[in-house]
Image (cartoon, rainbow, N blue to C red):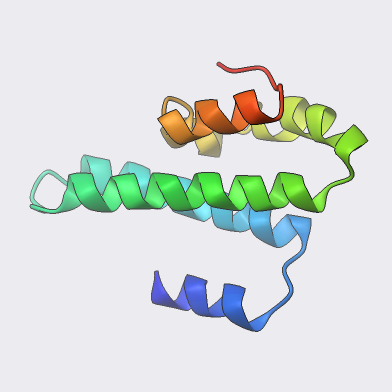
Length: 103
């Protein structure tokens, strides 16, 4: 995760970058949840889910307000790679904050 964080600090990120980072963190969260042999997996998965939601928030903030709802509906809500974070409190809160549909 340190490499991912370093990239974020060094560059001005685009919507695409935030999207890819959210997908990456969501998938790492899923992998951590599945790793039954790792004692800290639950904490690591929770951290990755929070990071994924943070990237989605940054992504939405980078869009013009009038594009956020359609972007959510067409891209975020439809992307199967974000499934690991959809039931997280942060995802629901983000949807509420922007008055977007919650799964």
